[in-house]
Every structure is written in structure tokens, then in C-alpha cells.
Amino acid sequence: MRDDIEKILIDEEVIHRRLDTMAARIEKDFPEDTLIAIILLKGALVFAADLLRRVPRKLEVECLNVASYHGGMESSGTVNFLDRHFPEVKDRHVLLLDDILDTGRTLRAVADRLIEEGAIKVHTAVLLSKDKARAEDVEADYVGFAIADEFVVGYGLDYQGKYRNLPYVGVLKQSAI
Ligand code: IMP
Ligand code: MG
Image (cartoon, rainbow, N blue to C red; front, side, top):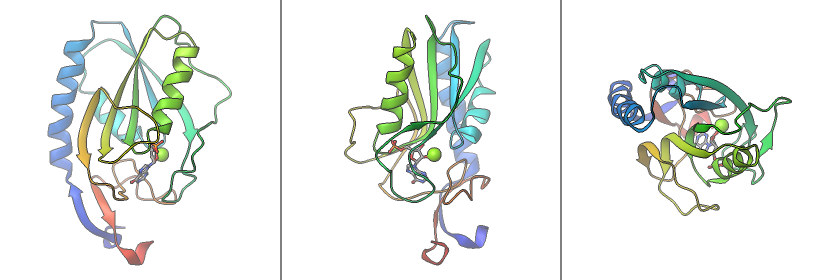
């Protein structure tokens, strides 16, 4: 797997140090027992596990399965909700966690749905934010790292379902694509 990586963009230690800072801010921003964290699967799995364990607050955790990339390197333009059950968010503050903010369609669609379902407010946290013009007018409240507009894998992010378990964020070799 590591042979497929052209370069490491953000190494594990740097990610963990940044998560300490993000978690401290989240802890400061939300009182005990007010928050429901919603993890967008599968991309935000690793990020959320590492971030939320650093937030010493009573909170609830839910997951949502959405698809927009269908495994490739281009956003499909539509966001599909894949779960039969939607978490109960009425009158709650939601912290929505995703791996990366790219076109913005995913965060926009999920945040809109959460508000429709009665959430008071949707706060958003992403590990990565691509520095580019978005299709939807959306920015995250908590951002780990701003990166250039290139395709990355690792730390939860996949290419065709693989590389999510790399402990760092990296760029694939041309030969692996
Ligand atoms: P958006 O809806 O275009 O903002 O894209 C968000 C989703 O696209 C993320 O949750 C990722 O699953 C996926 N995505 C966007 N950029 C990348 C990337 O560089 N590598 C892997 N997945 C990506
Ligand atoms: Mg994804």
C-alpha cells in the first residue's frame, strides 16, 4: 500500500497535534451534554474517532452513510442518503464531521437535511478543506488543514474503496490510479 504513495502531504504526528487544538476549541464552544456528533461514513471515520476522543464532553455519536463520489476521483454532483433510519436531531446542536470539504455539496445537502429534521444548529468540522471555488456556498466551522485542489488519500479518505487505513494523508502515484 505505501508503495502506491507519491508523497506524504500531512504526517500522522502533525494531524494529531492539530486535532488537539481543534478538540480544545470544540470543548470550549459547547457546554456539557448539548451536542450530538454525526459522522459521515466512511470517510470521516478515522478523523472522528481521533477527534472525538480528545473532546472530554458528554456527547452522543451517530453515523450517516452518504455517497457522492462513488469510488472515483470526481464528485458525481448528487448526494445520496443511504440509511433507512435518520438520527433524531430535533432541538439539538449537531456537530457534523466529514473528511474533506471539496465541492461543498455533501456538507450543504446533509446540513440542510439536519435542519429540516429539526436541528437547532449544524456546526461542521472537516479534517481537510480544498482551496477552490465551491459548487455550494459552504465553509466548515472547524478545519484541520487547508490543502491545494488535488486528490488525496489516507486517514479515512479512499480511492476506489482503498487507502482509508493509511495513518497519514498522501497523494497517489500515477501508477496506482
Ligand atoms: P464534496 O461534496 O464535493 O464537498 O465532497 C465531499 C466528499 O467527496 C468527501 O466526503 C470525500 O468522500 C470525497 N472527496 C473529495 N475530495 C476527495 C479526495 O481528494 N480524496 C478522496 N475523497 C475525496
Ligand atoms: Mg467519502
